[in-house]
Image (cartoon, rainbow, N blue to C red; front, side, top):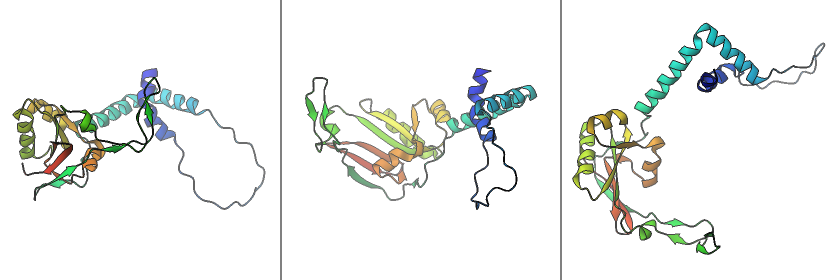
Length: 212
């Protein structure tokens, strides 16, 4: 039952949670008052789980939970605010960072001081990674990304989906794919249209919104 408790705990906690408190005016004590005896929350949850298990409801809760997790993995929530590229554009992105504090090695030697500006590409002469952002539900964009991934073995191309079903696409295209959860990469590079390609250009990264 311990394993079942782990998988169902979140669902049961939601069921057992009290309704949100409402604002009320203190009217004072009316009549006799008695101390409130609070039950141990874990004991209450365990009792509910035992009741659900006896009724067979626990199995249905577990199956529903697993189905939701599987659906989320198979088709994550699309990145909001992204549309298909209509007018291609391109710009340079400076990957430099400002050191927030002094950093030292195990011998106490400072190798990066607060306020220093460091460009990671200066320390990665062989950096060859390319990001290709595409809408996985657009067949033309998927073909564009797959062609780019297979075009040059010298490049390490990462196909990053902003929408679609990554697992199904990897099976059908035989190419590794990723999904931009919550649009963190899209926002980092300032991309608003796909397909978009991010690749090295000297000491910067070239970001290009292109047509497939």
